[in-house]
Length: 97
Image (cartoon, rainbow, N blue to C red; front, side):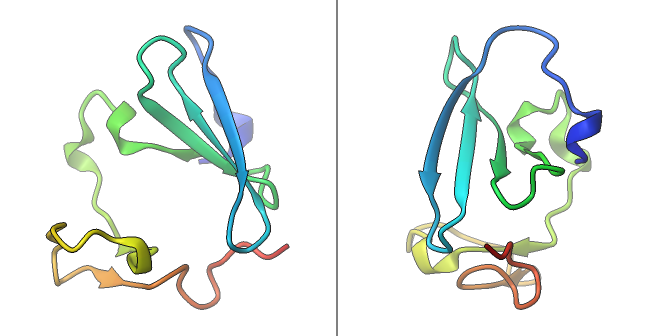
């Protein structure tokens, strides 16, 4: 979602920043009390916040469009074969440095 429309309304989250394979900095944000993942931000796209589906009161409306970073997927994870899968970001979709 656009970062200009995003705000934390309660609590103080914790952040963990690390370098992605692309060299971009990824900041992962968690609930400061329970550790639930809340959202991510990528250094090259400060205008976008990647909200985690687990934060929605009712996540049933969410429909995934693709599975990304399949190169690190666990072999026991079952995925819907009808959803596109990519080893990393899909061509033309990755955030460039």
